[in-house]
Image (cartoon, rainbow over all chains, first blue to last red; front, top):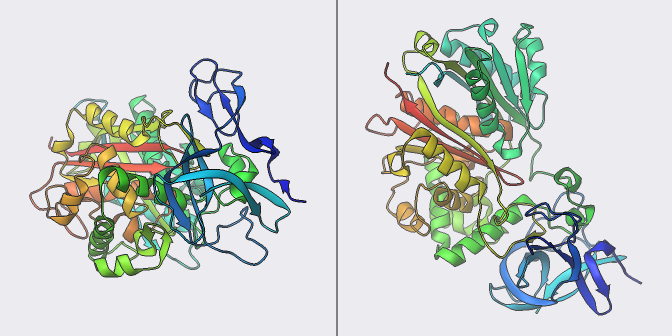
Length: 128
Length: 385
């Protein structure tokens, strides 16, 4: 059974949602949740669940295997698309799962799981 | 001239590239001696030293330059290291810590993209493990978004690499000396869309040293001192799109390059239109185009026309990266920001080693940008007593 690589990234595993936090002073939403606001340094941002759908804000394809600490799949490195997804109050950097299509700015995408390395763990991704 | 004005009175460079059997410190020592010779000084006359490196320990150079007891500060600020070393040295002189300073930058990187440790950037391990912590990936995503917002075709990106290769081919210190064509650049293997491998610079090796002097001492040492009319350092604002950011604010604002560039022009009392030769950080073709706009040297979208008409060539109205920039020189990151200043100083002194900007330019500008969102800019001016 696959487990989350970093449980702190998730507000819920079923149904899947990402954990964020909203600053009580300036309302900045950040991901993953943090004990201090990155904008105004106020303590005590409140944990929230982030929206599970958004639109691709920018993207690229990682076409060479990154150095460690990246872990390639057991079957070998495969180029993978990444991007930022606009969730309204925050843009989240993410793996993109778009099949054989090229990602496009403005495409609607939804939160899903993505295997890490040997598949023992999963992380988050957004896909069509 | 003001007693607190700071001038570049000597400069030295060790050619960038790959130098088997030569350490980063070896390159720094040779370069520092060359800069001292340029200023007609010995190491014993240096009051303050600042060294920048991300792979070596700069203050250890005293064992080879001379145990004079000089105040030596080491800085390490990613790709902005050189600019921040220069700012640190200039501020020490302005604070009265001496009349002469040496600024030394060097690095010797292993081949391939930089490896990065998430913890060093305040990030958790998952960020690197899942393949999101790659500098080239960030530059590509930033370029892709900028192209979308400002209608910049891939051809404009390629034209940056072509001009850099042409300038590098004419420069004796450059690493890459082969002129490229736009077809070659666009047809090269894609690294991270939209950037091909000929649109990126590579980590390499090299060193640069500058000798600074304060007030009238500069004119005793150098017939053509170049005044450091401004040197600024700024970090990111809350809405800027920076490398190694798991999240971004939807409101875009506060680029460190915009802030540092604006401050530099204001400090020097000039506008961007006064700049006659410029260096902007071109770790990749997209970054050069974005940095030209962020520093105020052009408007968003104007890059298409600037590149298409040759305006950024050495003979154009806004000569940019006349030594080939990072694209032709590679990036030993401690030395890179000082290479920019070295090139502009030589242009203003009429001693350019490669393509010389015609018309005896008097005002130059440099900009360097590093992770995780720090920029340093200078304004340099030719001085006549």
